[in-house]
Amino acid sequence: MRYTYRIGLFGAACIVFACVPFHAFGGTVFGDGAPKVLIFIKDGEPLGSASVALPILENLGAPAEFDVFIDVDRDGTFALDEQAVDSDWSFSEADTATVLAVRFEDRRQLRKLVRDAHRRIGVRVVIANFGGAKIGAQHDYRARLVAWDLTDTYSHEPGFIGGGPGEFDAAAKDAGASVEAKADEKIFNDKVPDLGPRAGKKNECVPIASANSLQWLAVKHSFTNDMPATTTDLLNELDQDMQHTAAGVAPANFLPGKIAFTNRHMLDLDNKRIDAVVTDGKSDMWDKILAELKAGEDVELVIDFKDSPSGTVKASHAVTVVGAHNKGTKQWITVHDPLTPNGNDTYKVERNGQVTGHPLGKGFCTFIVSESYVRT
Image (cartoon, rainbow, N blue to C red; front, top):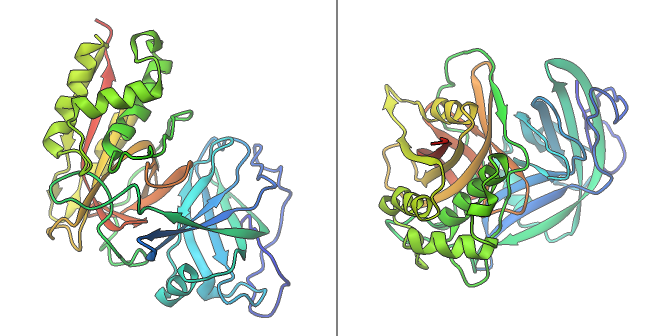
């Protein structure tokens, strides 16, 4: 059962679900504004990836199950091969877009979508399940296609945590076996900032991801007076502490830079780096992220982009993790990403630690840096 959004007339090829009012089930209210279909480009060419950003006006107290269809062939209907999001569970937060990766089963649909020159396209969003209750609600929108250009902000420099390497196939579904079934878990930190890139500051994802967390912790634990006066000052200090250059931040400078900042401002924070451990093809990174979030920590995640878990790293990127949840054998993280527009971006994490559907392609969870608030 679901919620859906779309444009056009119903036809023989349409997928039809029973509708329920928008204001049902604990205040799950969808905005009147149109969703956005984000097409990621660099140096004038599509990266081969896309996301859909949904307008949500209220918090959902538990993850909801989303299906999204995009009318790629523009015939006014939604065929089975136009399903762009297949049963992804995600938190939603008031006034912040809920962002899901576009991953068609038929890769040709993604190639057609990312090269579409039109500005509007039909989108149907379906909420099949909310808080464990099957609801079956849908609504159709005329969504706006938005080209999101990474050219001036991100590049790939070997050995640094920065940005994107080039074209990937974000639709690939070869992440391997699912994780073992476990009890359902959910944790979400709301009101975490989602700072964007600064003009003239390339590959600044590590300082930005860290600044998101520090600002959230400062409000949560009432030490804003001990922080730099402005966000610009905060980022400038983190840049210096982490030895940021136009190439990005060297992985070895991430944790020491955070510690240097913490010590200078005499903050009651305990900084630590936690690496992923892969045993018999299973990564423990998602479980470690969940544990840190449940302990009230902030979490910054470093993702390495490569063709396989043991492959050569083509690029690295840092994001702020704001949520983690699972449903049976499937598990997801929700992040604030300096690479993307403001929003809660949700990605599935596979058994081997692969993050599926990220705009930069096939990424693997490598390590996290987190901070504990410890009053001394």
